[in-house]
Image (cartoon, rainbow, N blue to C red; front, side, top):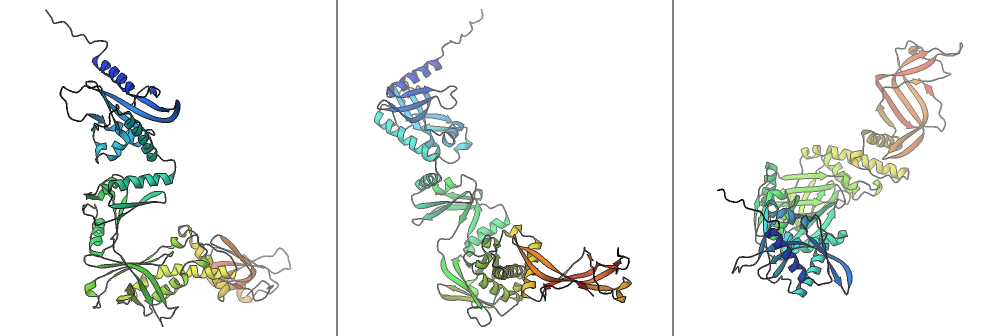
Length: 536
């Protein structure tokens, strides 16, 4: 005879446990508090609103309710294995506080744990796990009503700080959270180009272990230079690991870069001098020096200018005539959007680069806190490498002269938007105004002129080359500003003459000039106010 089939009860033990948990939980809440059951209940079962003096406060707390029947004589603190996807939802997305409530149906006790704070303070790596064990504080028991009510309000404030309504409040909350991780450090936060930048400063000597794991040779060299030369180190968060620093553990959870700098830097300057080293033949650039294991690193920069100087000095070779590494940086973007007539330190920089490319006897001296450290003389090859920079500076110099001459507030635009014609216009207009005129190759055009003068016999066969001169006003666009000058003389040289028959039977043939591969255009200001067109 077959055994009877097991019958599953319609009302399960799990349902009974759940109902008993709800009844016990609600019995510990103030009678006037509003309990709203959520359906469907994905991650949060109830939304409880605090009522004070019979009035709704708007303060709401989510509740995830779990029933628990501990084994007999169970003495350890209560705990519950929570799915990490739920914890991530509470921590990252919920705008109201969420309490995980565990109901002990054996002892008739109800415990709570605040999930957002638990998620923020949990050990690193919990997001990669399937579950995480939540251990409940034995003091967080709802029979302690005053303690529970205070905890609900504190949880609401904590959650508001996680999702603040203003940027300032958000930064203050982030600062407080990070400094709570390690009270040996202060944290400053700034927003630059839409990204958060954190600055950590130690209040005292810190001891922790750092492991570097750069994936490239360039990254490995940067780490080496950091230790040997004392240079700054910029490294991706996933290429470095700190042991013994909970603050850095928190920071390295997110993607980003870490800039590590040596704490002790000495102020100084770099002095360039040439010719007679008078006020117009020298440039002093503020600098900072940092000491590595082997070398002394110098970084100098003129404030609000494109110019930077970096050098690596070997203290053991200061009294020897040995070469050392020197690099010059020039970033024109630091002058962008400024009137060309007021660019910071322009004349000093222009004079320095002019001396460099001219290979003038240049002396470079390094000073730390007013004391001479080392002296160097750049090579001729150094000047050759600076030619492109000097060419740009020269164009800017000419634009400054034009801005002053025409009383135009010319502004240096974004350098990346400049085209070759922008530079050509500046050079041409400068030569016309301040030199004898401007000469340039000119092809791809033709001129048709009328003149009462007879055509020279040597040009009638069409084989000769002619110079045609006309006068008119011309316009040049400088950094988006059109500037018109005139009258001017335009001399088109090395042209081919072609005679075009005139419509007038007794008239002279019409001279037409066509370009050759050698054709040129020379422009200068007209010598008289109303010059007449002519050709020769």
